[in-house]
Image 1 (tube, rainbow, N blue to C red):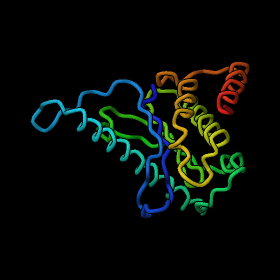
Image 2: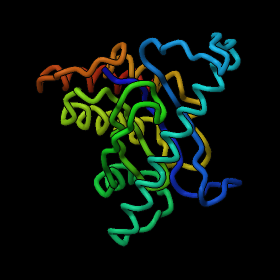
Image 3: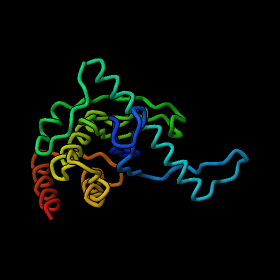
Image 4: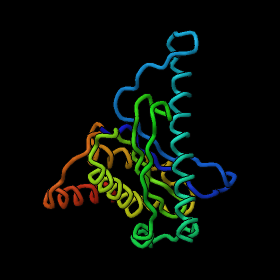
Length: 200
C-alpha cells in the first residue's frame, strides 16, 4: 500500500533558502496510528495535524538531499523551468529510492521513491513489501500527467490551484493508496479519460 504522495520543491524557490523544501501538494492514504504525547495521552486534532505535517516535511527534506546528491554526482544542475518542454524534462529527470526506518518519520519501515524534475520532486512513500517496479511506473505516470496536463513547470505555484485535479489523478491511478496492475488497453482508456477530465 502507498502511504503518501508528495509534490515538493528541491531547488531554492523565491523566499526559501538553499536547504529548504516547500511541500506544494500532499496526500496521505490509509489510517494513521494514534500518536501519543510524552505523558501517554492521545494528541489533540491540531497537534496530530502538526505532527503529520512535520512527518511529511522530514520526507521532503530527505528526498531533497537525495536529489541534490544525485545531481552533484552526475554533474547536472537545476535548470530553469520551460513551459512546453515537459516531456524532455521528464526524460532527463533524476530518480531514486530511499529506505525510511521505523520512526523516520512513519511508525513502520517504509520506502520512498522519488523523481526529481527540474525544481520539483514527486515522491511516493510505500510499504517495504510493495512491488517497487509497479510503484516506479505509477510515479512516472503521475509525474507525466501532472507536468503535461497541469503545466506544473510554468511560473507560480499552480499545483496549489489545481489540487482537485491532482486528487482526481490519484483517485484513478492509486485508488485508496492501492497500486494497480494496468494492461495496455486499460492504460490507454485511462489516458483518454484523464485527458478529457484535465481539459475541462
